[in-house]
Length: 194
Image (cartoon, helix red, strand yellow):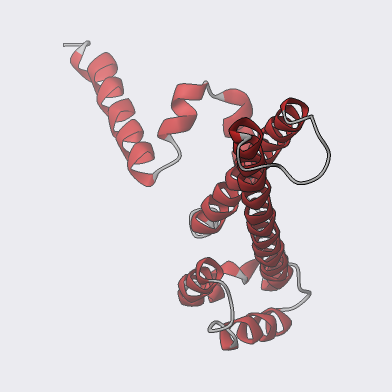
C-alpha cells in the first residue's frame, strides 16, 4: 500500500515545502517593505519626479507587495490541494476499515467511478489498487489476517540497525540479503568442515 501511495505522499511533501518557502519569502518581503518604508520617510503627499530615491523605494515597495499577493494566492491553492488529497486519502483508508467485503467493494467502486474528477495522484493510486483490491480486503473476510503489517514493521524498526532497514525496503534488497545469508551459512557450516 505504501508503495502505491508514494506518489501521493511525494506530491503532498512537495506542496508542503512550497508552502514553507512561500511563507518564508512573504516574511522576508514584509521585513524589506518595513525597511523601505523607514527609509522612504519624508514629506507627506505625492512624491515629486525629481526625488529619485523616494521614487525607487516606492517602486520596490509596490513590487514586493504585488509579489506577496501572488504568493498568498499560491499558498491558498496549495493548501486547498493538500486538503483535497487528505480528504481522498481518508476515504481510501475508510475502504479498509469497513465491516464487510461488500461494503468495502461498494466504497471502492464509488471512488473508482469518479476517477476523472479526482486529483491525478489519487486517480493513479485508485487505478493501481483496482488490480489488487480483492487481496487487499481479505482481512475483512478472514479474521486471522491482520489488517496492517505494523507488527512486522515494528519488529524491523526495533531490532534491526538502520543500514539493514534500508536494504529491506525493497524486494530485491530482501532477496539479496537472504541469498547472502545462505551463502555465508554454507561457507561456515559445510565448507569449513572439510
